[in-house]
Length: 332
Image (cartoon, rainbow, N blue to C red; front, side, top):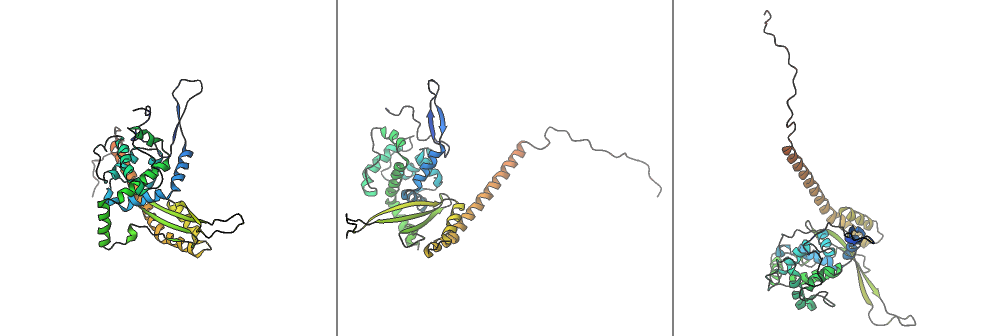
């Protein structure tokens, strides 16, 4: 395949937070030195977290886990890393989604064949589930290399579009209908905001123990159009929105809750109380469970080490001081 020489397969993974760059010494024929650029990784994470599509993907994977399959067990951070630097996790995720969209390609389990199958699916569905031009099209195998070269936000748009396609398949719709018949609320599938300030700012809270919990803020910006004399036109103002990920950890949730609770805006105070009463207790419970699991793991490792290296193995018993024995009996 032309244009792909020297590239790594998508199944190759790197440590999270470590972006690799090749730097060759000037005037030297030595192999390039690999430099890990964590600042670039952090900027890419921030860029992804500023997109509502990431929240949409995480919500979809959380809500429809019973339909997709619970074998993925990917956290939000692992998904972010996979979008920034494609690895086996991104392949695993796309394959799981593609298998639920008939007709299923028989070559999905091939190393990178899922990229081609992805392109063919999106070519059919893109105009129905996304806006703008499709970022990736099938090109006789070249799409595999092109996927690796895409910006992380483009890969996010592709993943979100695939989730949208998966959401309209028969098994997904049947799952929704059955859940509603059993008394579940529509809010289980269509997330409601937890509050707002009444001026275009809304707050959203979502997550589960596998993916993690996140707090979002959406700000609507209304831009009225004016003529050269400074007078507003009668046409409706242009509306744009700004999406933010406010918190992903217990400490960040506590910080945001404290800030909102001390706000002078009553609506923001209400949001702060909801975070304190609904989100933080869940996160604290998860944190305690993680700490218990970590302690249990450490105890198991210590016990295993003790079995491998029994105390005193190969060391003779120390000589004990013996008292002299007397065989004479005193008079009774």
